[in-house]
Length: 287
Image (cartoon, rainbow, N blue to C red; front, side, top):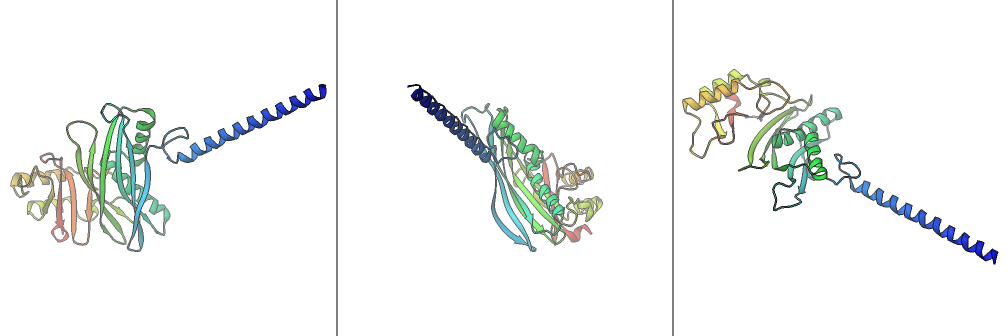
């Protein structure tokens, strides 16, 4: 009888140990699955993935790979209440592969990504993705919506020029629209200002001689053509005020693109619908 009781107790203890071990293993498997699902670099293991990064295509230019990349996010807990946190993002940007100097390649790619996010909300990529994480995981009371497209204006052995165009909305009556440029050296990985190619004085002279094309920046079609004396002098004065720092490429000499025949310069001009103007110059007019 005593033998049977001891045997029964032993079996119960064995069953209990196995059950505890199984529960522990199951919990570990669930924890590991959660960690694997949280591939978001801005999230901790216990937080939701705030956004998705994808490569949607790839092409080749000048023997270098150009990846078409996109960051997307869609988080709106209560669509009927705009006071709730909201995140709707579609951020497109190119990334280069195949450069011999990988340190320069990394610098170029960081600038290409940061240019896209700075156009949307005047923040670099790290700051923007951290904001996404805070909206999704910490209920940050922010309404954030933005989308863009990009276009590679020109790519040579020495540099790449890209335009970013889109809209952002943080609440209010209407969204803000933008059309920005960036030109990057492929030999140094640094942003290039238009003053590396021609001077402000050359640009102002071309403006006053009406040797430009108004690409964007009037109130409405026919609002002004850009050849009125008051308008052209306003353009000239705005170019004079452009800064030469690299803290941001917007509102300074770095917001430009160049190809084999033309230069595109964007600058603040508050007598226009969206607060900026884009002028196109032939390179011959800037000599």
